[in-house]
Length: 275
Image (cartoon, rainbow, N blue to C red; front, side):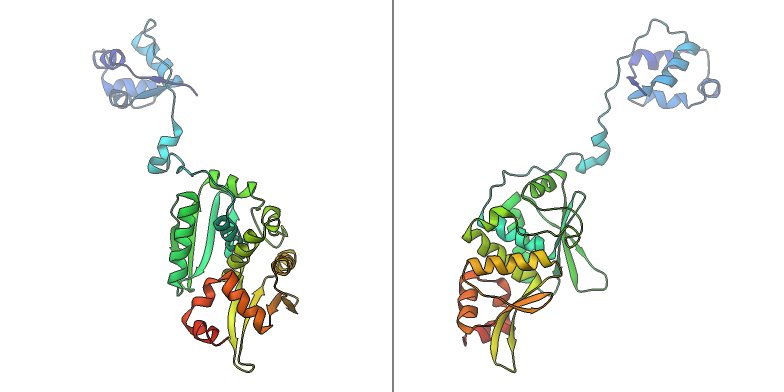
């Protein structure tokens, strides 16, 4: 329904009418007093008011409603700087493939709230890539922190980079082709995957450090092993859902080359130095 701009002439006509505000409102079926402070009036109310005040010559300009203003500070999307394919972006894609999710226009990453250093790292990475700041939601029971951001434009960018909305297993999401075509990008993507769905751990029985990766999305698991093989690392199959790097020399080279952030954690970094 159209709306029209309320002018001073209309307000003056309401005030000087032979009807009281109450009587006029009763006849019209809406509160006329509001017309004195409102900016606009809908077409139906204007036609009724025009008849009762006998204002056939008074013309009102059509009002163009800006519905975005109803959202206040959220009226306009945050600007996103030009995103180019890069090593940092490849790592961020790996993080999203691991512990991230894309739903409608929301992007989120689940983090262990006890690993504050990595949360800070992710915030800085996100900001450097898109010039945006993650919002934070802490799970009331679990040791989980959700870093999230709502943006239709950002979602469109991520979808153009070969990611998909929704369930990653059902969608059989894999590592984007542009990453698999570049060895440097593959290494950074592997880093993001290991730091989310992977692990760097010390086996007490064998007194050896291993690198593992677990994922219930079989195509992604196979992609992980394929990319690792392309850059020189032979991950062996553990079971249906995981693979592991066992060879001591490869483990040492992987940690020095890929530099997963998990390898810097105190309980494992001391063991790595013994390699």
